[in-house]
Image (cartoon, rainbow over all chains, first blue to last red; front, side, top):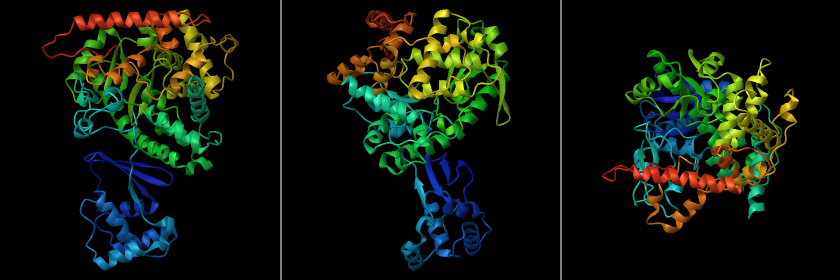
Length: 168
Length: 358
């Protein structure tokens, strides 16, 4: 079943973006993965989802594709429960199907370096893990709000340590 | 070095030209230019706009463009999250009878074709001085997001608060009425804010361009030009910068504005600043004493504090003319150093740190 709590979802023309508020992770779902995810309502069976995907994307009816999507969605923690159990042979079969091309389900994490104000927040531990920076703290601390305390930002620490920390 | 830097600045201007429009003009971009400009675009929040321009061109397949796309995606999510916080902040203050005016941030993002094109960090709320204490106490005692609460109206303090409030407008955000500045006041605020910070973020110049091009038929240029004549001249120069660097349309803008001339040094000052990959703006810098163990980095940080001609002139309230800027820059350094010394004297060395102001 698809998770709905603590997620921010934004639909773009060709993909669906999901931000996990609990884990502070952003994911990008292509159309196939998004269709499968939306169909996970706790009632619809895998064959029914496969039929829906086939109909909407004009693809052959393929349950293995749904299984592959569910595996990726589960790994990204976008399902309320883990994906339904599949035996190893069917997973191998799913992974082995290269013929899906662009229709292959894809759930990818969104990571962009040095985004000053584009990312929602930084986890306190990640902020502090920058450690002492040889370039000086001006260049190290990203100044995003800290996820645990949004009023605080990841800023250079005073004193001679030269690291970053969450402060007002 | 200078010429090289300005080339990067010019490349950034070329990438962002028209990027605020629903269908921006096609862009051809070499892999070399993309690689050189992407770090700066990412750092200054303009990566989403760059993606908006390259997404339908051949450059979209460049490895550097992938980073722009990722930034656009993150900014799209960020916009969805932040606008909830904006609505909450407006509701929160209204509950105690404070009608704050939202400036910059979402107030300008809403004029872009997609909110993802205009990321913002703090929520800038402006309240009359008399209501500041009440608003500040409320924000302090709640779990509101990062709100930058301004006492008074910052760069617009040459105008009467009552006039600003009378011209302000209520717009809907997820069903919540949010008060924003009148469009003339907002354009002036955007222009003066850009200059106060030395014009370092290309995104802020795009803001001016989008505000110019999406202004309503009722836009009153006399209101825009009202208040301090010197500040009005600064604001006009910011509009001319948006035209010259980004191709912002000045269609139907009065001749008393389009007929003005930019000071000779202004364009190069902006391009130089855009070229500086290591520039950190005032207010976001580490205290100088945090460099004790990294003297080389400390020297770089000291040099990075040298104000450009724009922020020096605006900081000192000087005129935008063709006279050399060096005297302003030196005087601004002296002014800041004096402020720094005052803050050091005021420090309680038993635990508090000096404010990172110089």
